[in-house]
Length: 196
Image (tube, rainbow, N blue to C red):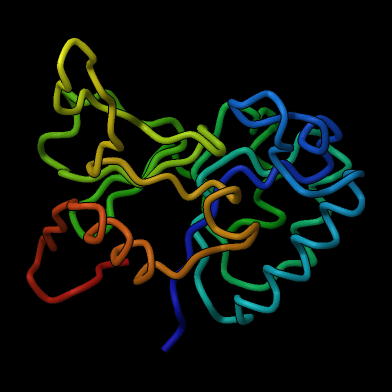
């Protein structure tokens, strides 16, 4: 049976991704010096994990420029695109590489989106698997420590940007395990496991 993978924010062809830094202002967001090096490393990592018949939900921001869209033809899998804010080209250009284009997708009672959904819309889903934040996570107010208020990762949100998945798609089952390890609650709609 084909496996199911999730990935987001590949940004193929994006030169800036090789110079942007993490919140500390020093550490590079991605360990590559050029977009060509980045693209080749991510294509290799993708194809080592994903087989030709596996399903991949790409949660947006595939490429930064039109010419890099052709990179998608080199990637294994039956691909579905959940459009991101940088996926600005006409639908027909994406349909060459993706079986389906969507704004969001509900799987196992969880909502998959590019940008994290507002917490007031989260109630019926319980968990939002998303992209957009790169190395960051959705945070919430944690326990107070004296006069200081702390923040902690909100377990209702899980980011699958490549910065969180070793620059390749991640198995859906591994995402579920990460959510549970962080204290999130997974509720399958039909009680029979995954619904893809």
